[in-house]
Amino acid sequence: TQLLEQSPQFLSIQEGENLTVYCNSSSVFSSLQWYRQEPGEGPVLLVTVVTGGEVKKLKRLTFQFGDARKDSSLHITAAQPGDTGLYLCAGVRRTGTASKLTFGTGTRLQVTL
Amino acid sequence: NAGVTQTPKFQVLKTGQSMTLQCAQDMNHEYMSWYRQDPGMGLRLIHYSVGAGITDQGEVPNGYNVSRSTTEDFPLRLLSAAPSQTSVYFCASSYSYSYYTGELFFGEGSRLTVL
Picture 1: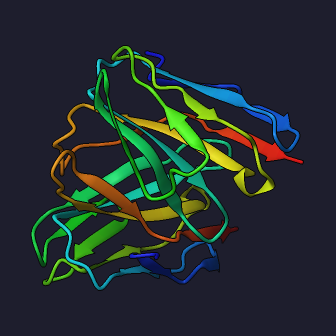
Picture 2: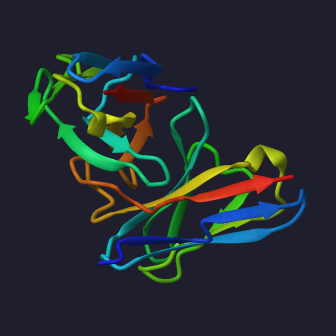
Picture 3: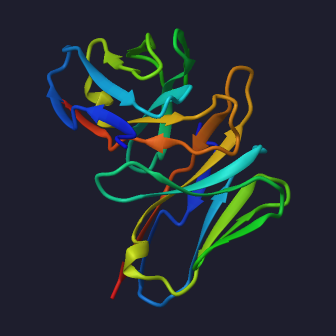
C-alpha cells in the first residue's frame, strides 16, 4: 500500500514558469522531507519540515507542511533547467526501534529552455 | 569523503542465481538501509539496521537477506534471483536511528537485471 501519493507524476515546463508539486497522505507524519534525484545518482535531501503549517524557502523553492501533517507541497518559482530531476517526498514516522521513511511515488520534472 | 559506496553499479543475473550487493559508509552512521526503486513506485524499504548486529525488515523483505557485522558495511543478499527483483537498489545511511529530522545519505545505486 502506497501511503504517499505525489502529483503530478510528470511535468514538462519551459524555463521561467512556476509549478507546484503535491504530496498527499491519509497518515500523519512526525516530519516530512523532500529529496531531489538526478539521473544515475541517489536522492539528495532538500529540506525537512516538522511543524504543521511550517513553510521553508530554499532560494526559488518553497516547501509547506500541511496543518494536519498529512500533506506537503513544493512550489518552484521561475523554474530553470537545473531544476530538472525526480522530486521525492518522504514522510517520517517514529516506530519502536527506528524512525521510518515512507517515500512518495515521485514527480519527474523537466525544464526546457 | 567517500560517503556511501555501493558495488557493483550494474549486474545481470539469470533466474535462480544468487548475489550480494555491497554497501559501505565511512561516516560512522548508526542507521543503514536498503531501498529498491521501481518506476512510479518511489523508493521502497527492503531491510534496515540500527547498529552492528541489529537488523529488521522493511516493506518488501521477501527474497532478500541482510547482516550487519560492522558499523561500516551492510550487504544485501539475493538468495535466488527472480525477474521481479529487476530494479535499482539504493543503500542509505543516517547518523542516528532515532532521527526524525536527520538526513539520509544515499549511494549512487546498483542497477540489477534478472533474466
